Structure formats: C-alpha cells, structure tokens
Amino acid sequence: MNFDKELDAKGLNCPLPILRTKKTLNEMTSGQVLKIIATDPGSVKDFAAFAKQTGNELLSSAEAGSEYTFFIKKK
Amino acid sequence: MDDQKKLAIIATKGTLDWAYPPFILASTAAALGYETQIFFTFYGLQMLRKDLSGLKVSPLGNPGMPMKMPFGPKWFKDINWNIPNAVQSLVPGYESLATTLMKQTIANNGVATIPELRELCQEAEVKFIACQMTVELFGFEHSDFIDGVEYGGAATFFEFAGETDICLFI
Image 1 (cartoon, chains in turn brown, orange):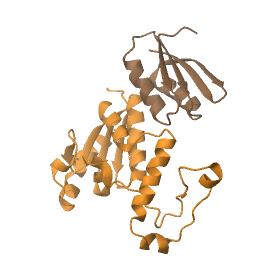
Image 2 (cartoon, one colour):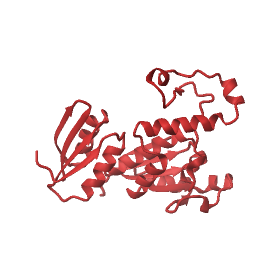
Image 3 (cartoon, rainbow over the protein chains, first blue to last red):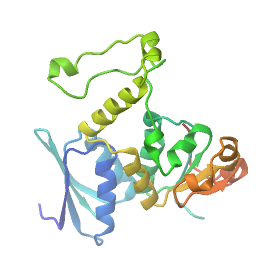
Image 4 (tube, each protein chain N blue to C red):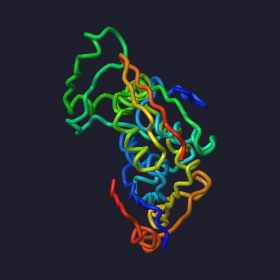
C-alpha cells in the first residue's frame, strides 16, 4: 500500500504509539496516509478505537509475527 | 454548542505507580480530541514538582505488587520475591531499591517515564490545576512546580467538571 509517511513505534508501549501517531498526523495534510509499525499487542484494538474516535480512517490493520502494521488516512 | 468531548481527572496520589493513570489517560484523551484538565490535590501535587525524583514506589503494605527482578536470566526474572512487610519496613533504603527496580522494569518494557508523559500532556494542552489549599497545607511554593500550572480551589474544578463527559478520581 502507498503511504506518505512512516512511523516506527516498535518497542513502545501504551499510550506512546497512539500519542506518536497523533503527533505525526498533525504534521500531515488531509488525505495523506501514515504507515505505523508497532509491537504492542494492545495496539490492534487501540488503533481501531483511535480511528473511530478521531475520524481518521484505518485503511488496514495487519499482524505478521510480533509486528503490527497499520495504515491510517488523515481526515 | 461546543461538541468537543471533555475529561476531568482528580489526581490525589503521590507515588510513581499512581502517577501513571492520570498522565496516561489525560495524554490519550487529548490525542483523541478531548479537552482535558487534571486537578492535582493532596499527594497528587508531587506530580507537578519540577523535580520528580521524589516519586517512589512502595511495596510495603501492597500485596498486589509483584516483586520481580528486571535483569538476569528468565528463571531469575520469574521469581516473585516474597519479602515480609516486617523486613521491608526495617531495611533502610528499601523503597529506593524498589523504585530503582521499578524504573528499570518500566524502561525494559518500553513504557514512557513520568516526566515524558507529563511533557506530552503539556504539549497536547492538557490543563493542570493545582489545589491552592493543599499547596499551602503542605508548605509548597508555586516555584516548586513546573510552569503552566494554574492554581484554584474546588469551585474552579467544578466549573470545568460540570461540563465534562467523563470525570475520574484517581
């Protein structure tokens, strides 16, 4: 999937992946896509909840081994 | 009408472990678009001090706290050190040792530090209110606290809390 920016949130635990994501999205423009890689198993539910509450669209959420990859489109 | 969601937290605890819930919830709420305030009162004022080294964790009288070592081989880390309260209370520096081990565990797990979370809250414009009555009661000066703190009383808290969607006492 194409993306405009990538955020490495590996090794970070709640709530840092969400806070870093929010901060990175603030630097982006509407319609741009952010790719996030995380290792926190709680992030799967958290990113879905973040997207639902902020209106930024979660385009995909995938798990490969111990890594979770999310694509979020900025509102 | 302003449809922004609002969260108010009263933070009353002054230990390292209990400093986490208010700052984690406030910073996350802010990231989700909530307007957020934390009212710090009694021991919660410790979380506003410029110097946060006074935040410690005490296993004494806390049977819910696992005492595990943050280093060494897995079998060693898995041991839960069951140290009787009577011993904990007699050994000088026991809390400092427990705090050092806790901070190491926090770092090992990629969990943010309290100064880091507090700064993230401030960046996200979480408003910090210190209870003026307890500031005086405990002999603090405003200069003991970080910049950006506002000072007020119970009425100040309710002015915002009365309009919130979520209100927590921690």
